[in-house]
Image (cartoon, rainbow, N blue to C red; front, side):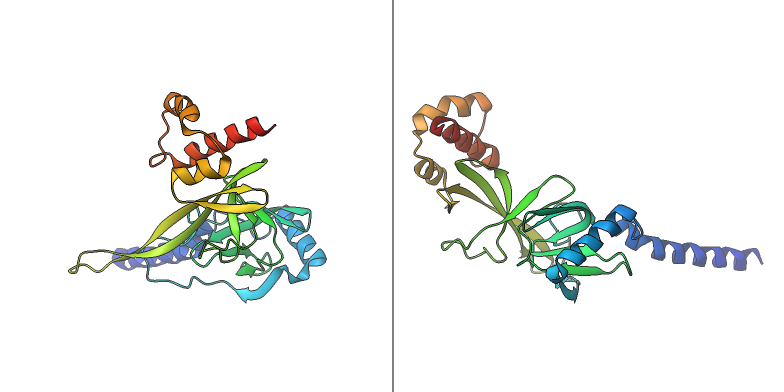
Length: 242
């Protein structure tokens, strides 16, 4: 009798974990949250075409890891549409397919947001992504969302995307996601892909010898600290252009 009760209790616990797991993956976002529901209804009222009408599902389900920017959780963020900002919207950014996903309050389903209608969005960690025009020399422009790092006369942006990496071992075939980052400097409304540090100096018209003392003081290396290195160059160029 005790054995039967134990099996029954185990069964109940398994069912409870199965039901709770989706909530954990969605970052503990309640579908009945009043502020979220209000923001969602406002978007639907003013911009009904912001949703594609498609339910989201990962395109690659057998790959180790996840295709999202940041952690594997849907959390509250903001969306900018034609000058209007909508806050407390559940967001998750799939950077493998470059799809922005939200959660419907009615049935708690993941749905795809229309990239043509969104100018910018900010995730829970503060990362802000903005829409940019096509960059001719860059083949991974795709939907055109770039993380905004610095804005000024010269801007600094980063493109995040994921590729599928295969383990080199023939005895243990293993596929996983590999995140790739590409940095861009925007000058005179044109995005310049920065492959090497000399590209940055050329775009910003900076003398490397003049900047070297600042780099040494900050202990920055282009290979090890690429984002901080480029941010220092862009900030210096901005100050000199004022």
